[in-house]
Image 1 (cartoon, rainbow, N blue to C red):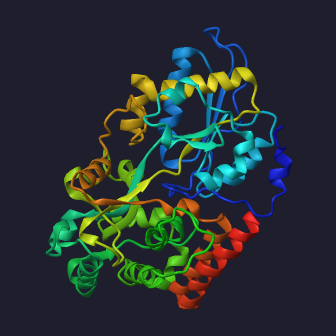
Image 2 (cartoon, one colour; image 1 turned 45 degrees about the horizontal axis):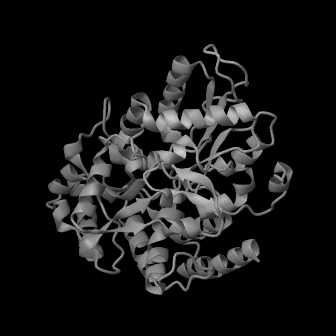
Image 3 (tube, one colour; image 1 turned 180 degrees about the vertical axis):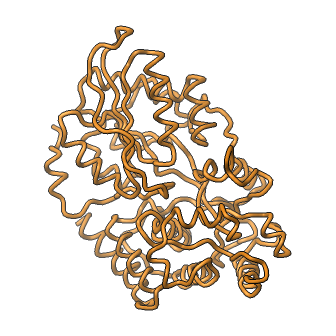
Length: 443
């Protein structure tokens, strides 16, 4: 029997709150309420209500939903959660009389919250289009979630500015190289007219880049040493390396470290767009915000390089690869809405309209058999790294025990940057906070 939404709403700690991957745009929901179920103009029954996680893809999803409705007559409503609010909005929407029929979780930890609401996708047409069953998330023999995009992140680099500073991306293949270049740019900042890094904004629209994506680096390398994929404790072996890269960001930036608490994701992006910084940590999802009509860059201007922290074989390190975007179908929805949702998902990943929109408009690499090649520069560069034999860094942050852990880490990182806290506070949250959160949620 399904658990009630009320039980979820009563939880004081919600594990696996979704990271704002690509959530730098603090957009409000694009629309409100789900489409009413019922017969469509074409005679098909059911309706689709998709609660979308990715603000930067909202326009594209709205257009794709409209195209599907025009083609099939089936009503599709897309609501997009604002940055860093997905889990809260999902809980709220699930309590309504017309809850989402299609939603997402960020991986195994996120699925643990919602598995009792997930329809078993075993044997469905959309599951049959997945490039490998190994990509899916299971609970026992049931397939409860499937990824719809693979992404990568690293340090986006303005090659034109880098050249003005006397360097090329080929000069950077280690932390020491990155440090040398960044600090040299800082010493000549007034002369050059730009900084090394755009601001490491620590408000909610930006801090996920550091309390999750950057935190991935010490977690990943500790897991590699232990030969594990998840752990109830973190020793913090590589936290000095985490400090080194964070210090490099905040001390060679467009602003003073104390100002980062008020800097947003938009601030960081806009600084990079304005040519005020050479480096900008973000992911492949940012491509459409940087290149295209009305944007200042072409593919020739940009590159994405790995996040180096001085660990391992850095010359053979690739970008950070993975996904935290898994589709789930609401098994508590009406039968006709479940089928309508499955049909919509299948159309998205098989039709020319759907696959072209996901590749071209959203910049996605979809893990389905009918995927079209993405024009996204960063996607192509990621593939080139892999083709050259470089080792991608997997998304170990999917095993972070809770959003509470991330929020507390962001708080102490912000205080550290402002000079009102110490790095020992960061270490304590990273290590002790991890153990206590893991125990609280898994005890």
